[in-house]
Length: 437
Ligand code: XUL
Ligand code: CO
Image 1 (cartoon, rainbow, N blue to C red):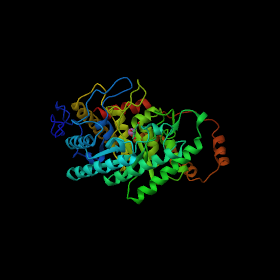
Image 2 (tube, helix red, strand yellow):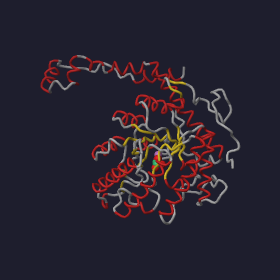
Image 3 (tube, protein in one colour):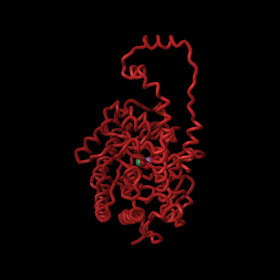
Image 4 (cartoon, helix red, strand yellow):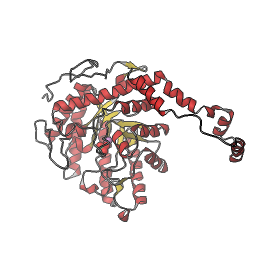
């Protein structure tokens, strides 16, 4: 069955094209900085939004029918989602997908029945993967929707709930490896707290670290080769989440000796919720050798919650691409953890949203390459720090001096007044002149 008859294959036609089902900027074969765009931009489809989300929100029911012609909640429906998903990815030229266990099959009363369904549906996905060459970028377990996780999964106050989390993680790892996925995500939706009045924070953090350690041991045993990721988010659904931002999460990983196996999966909208910019989170991760993958979306300044909008902001994509290019090859890719707006309720909108997102990131890549080639901004930063290349600067950086010696130099200078401008406005003007020339 063909679900999206209105489009055959989305191809690059260039910025002049008025075809709504064509890429204007994403030209997969075009070489940028020595590599085709499709290798720089490893796009992935998020199973949950694209095949699951129907526009339901706190105030109203769904606006788009994602039953794909069969009764939702059945095995047939799970398989219809596979068909629709692979048709969508093939038509878009997307080579990867990401999933939660319960995106693939509806959760059953008995977890053993859920697992049987997962075996069957993943067999079906595997067939489709063989036909198309599409594969899994990362998998994860949904440890936040079921009421049993109301007080956390790996950070639950109850040991029996913790074991349920272990069971779901084990199965999600099995399915990820089976589907050729190299990476595995922990996003701790309920791993946090509402009030310290009822919370043993120390115990909770130690317990989730232990769960992650066991997940790594098992994952490596069954052949997971890539990275485990933490996806930081400061709040929502919990008031305080333990993986607040990249710096917090990296500190946590180091404390518990998990930093060799884990990296960051940075989501743009989560960065904004932490009152950071996306590029700040990417920079922190990169500088710590921890940039693993990206959840590509954007937030909304006016709304201020996790709106998971498709990325359209070209400046943000440009700054993000600069960080990605400097980080070198990511173990992950760019997963569109994004959904169409509730009122964008047609199948056509799903395609248009992905075209927008992919074109935005293509522009980000093109612009980042232009800025690197232009070199003025980078050169300015280098010059700004040039006194650190003096003999004194080198001596300090090599740790070959002490506070007394530097204090003497400081006092001998007697007085110092600020003299070199940070030139922010000049740099913004250069930025615009490079982007829009
Ligand atoms: C929630 C979120 C999740 C993770 C995977 O904000 O981003 O969808 O990406 O659990
Ligand atoms: Co995400």
